[in-house]
Length: 309
Image (cartoon, rainbow, N blue to C red; front, side, top):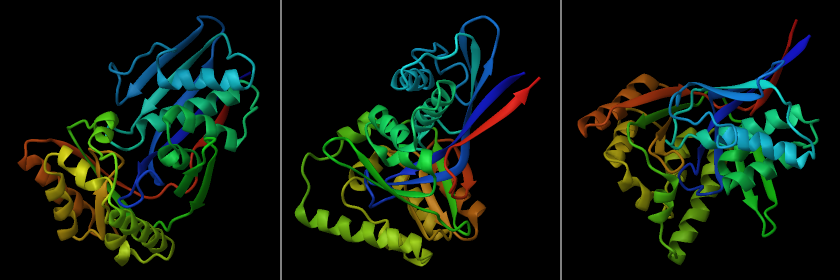
C-alpha cells in the first residue's frame, strides 16, 4: 500500500489598499501540489492547468521543487528517490494573486511531509518568507483568513490572523497584462511624505477594524492609500477606470491585488454585475480579462493523504 499526498494552497491578495506589505487575504481559489510514489524513474514534475507548457518541469528550477528541496535541507534528510509531483494550477500567473507564494508554501508543506515533518508551522512560515522576501502573501497562503504580518530585524515573522465572514465576496478581475513585481517595486519612491505615512497608519487601522467589525460600508474609506497605489495603478491600462466602475456597479470598495495587474472588489451583492463592469473597462482599452467570484479561505493550506492499494 502506498500513500498519495496532496497539498491544497489558496490564492492570496496582498496589500489590500492601505495595508502595503502588511496585510494579506486568503481566497477560495486553489492550486494543488501532489506526490505519488513510484518504483523507479527518479523524481519528475508535471504541470497541469494554468502555466502548462510555460512553467518549467525541471525539478531544481521549478519553484515548488526548490521549496521541497529546502524543506529536505532544513529537516536534514533527502526527498524520496522516485515519485511524480503534479502541479494543478488555477491561480493566474504573475497577476497579483499569490501564485508564487502558493508554489512556495505548497512545496514546503509537501517537502516537509515527505521528509519527516520536522518543521512546525512557524518554521514553514519563516522559510516561506525567506524565499518570498516578505510574508504578506506567504502568511495567508499558509494560515488563511486576513493576516497582519510584521518582520523584525532578524527576519522573524509575527502574524495575527482573523477569520472573516463569508457574507463578503471578493471579485477578482485579471486583465491580459503582466505587471512584474520588480517593475511594481521600481516605480515606488525612495522616501515618503510624513503626512502620507500618517494617512496610511490611520487608514490601515480603520480598514482592519472594518473587516473585523463586519462594517463593510466602511471598507472604501479604509482602502485609501498614499504609499503605493498612486504609483502602481498607472501600470495597469484602464485600472483607475475599472476601480471606479466597480464601485459604481455596487462594490463596497475596490483596489489593486498585490502588485497587480489583478483588481479586487469587495461586495455583498451584485457580484456578476460588478465583475462585468470592470471587464467592460478592460475591453474598452483592448485587454481581455478573466474574473473569479470568491470567498475568504479561513483554513489556509490543507494536506490530504490518500491511501492507494
